[in-house]
Image (cartoon, one colour):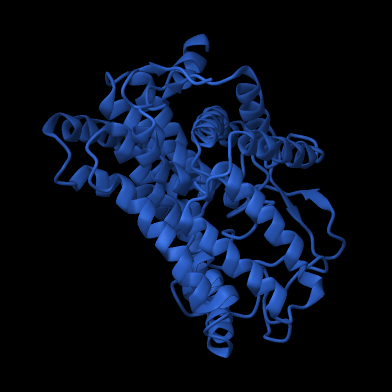
Length: 423
């Protein structure tokens, strides 16, 4: 067990960049608060810890200076004008949601490009992955032990209630299967790169298999796609050397052989969910209506959208009494909520993030590129891109930020040595 934690904390993918003591404490507080808020076994007040840590972290990075990435600043301006000018229904509380989104992206993404901000979010990224690298494999074990901490909101009274294990409801240690799925996909990719690039430690094969199983147990098709595609992309990339390809084939072969004896149980959730969608009339039956609503909203206001963090209240889609919505797709949500103005700003950031790592040869850049591809794919089927209070929003934007930050890590010469110092 000791080696298990050591191998996770000492994962060579994590850059060992030194920072001030207060920066380290805040990075751990933010990571624990954000991850703890989506763990089913943690108390509900962990959400408050997350918000407090977020506010303190914003103050910490701002002390290091205010130097905005121009692409993020342009997006902020468009979004501010969006909520000030458009007649958005007050139930959606768009102004407060925009404030929260802005704070999240300023803290964990690449909106601020000072050295302090770059180093801080690198630590947060590392700490979040460390915590999830522990929780995801244990969630896999929970399936075999009959443990499930998944919770979901019941529309009748909005109370949190325990749910029984069934297709699409297994969350392991996380509060929902739709949370376990994408997190497990990200962690599986992390162990994949850790094994094939650094010493081929066998423990990483075991952790890779357990994390992949957790992803399949969540029965999230979007998460499974986000797991498979980046690994295949990395495997067949022309830039991958023969040694890396060989080790990648080894870990995939071992994983397939390990899963084969009980493949029926592993894939049953995903297969059953897909069969239900086919019965509904299409491959993505459970999302078709959402896509249609978002497209109709875009057509009704193609230039400026219908309003940040909102939907058409009479368009037919449902929303919670507190204004919480599920857009169904992050990318389509950007298009419907902010129109072409917002969508262009958003996609320029995404394109910039990909360009920062696409032609780089070292493992850190390849790893971040794979994570970026995974999150971009998953965001096609889940609408969290503007949900500043949610963990997946933080995970999405911190990965986008890490891809961009590869450029700034080189600029500040934080990639040149194994251990760097920063005051």
